[in-house]
Length: 115
Image (cartoon, rainbow, N blue to C red; front, side, top):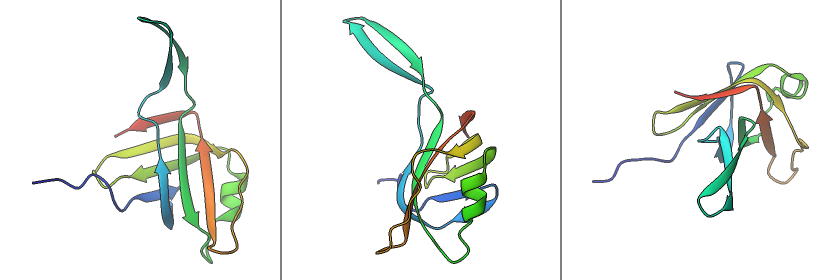
């Protein structure tokens, strides 16, 4: 019998829950490895991040998100695992689409931890 590993996901930014359409991502590893030659690799630190697609609801926290530079982003996955990004801030362009009201958010931060 199978177990549920994906589905509904919850994201809160400084305690305020966002309405999601999907696309939630968080890194499993704190480093990125690349093979130099077979058996030898280099390793670089990865910036901790959370990416997601949200809906711009009437109460969408525009000011909090666009001005925030030390936010806490908590992602609760269907598996019961959570990823907490601290010292978070938005990177890249933040745009809303008029046809479906979707906003793609890309947070990076100081530390990201799985719980």
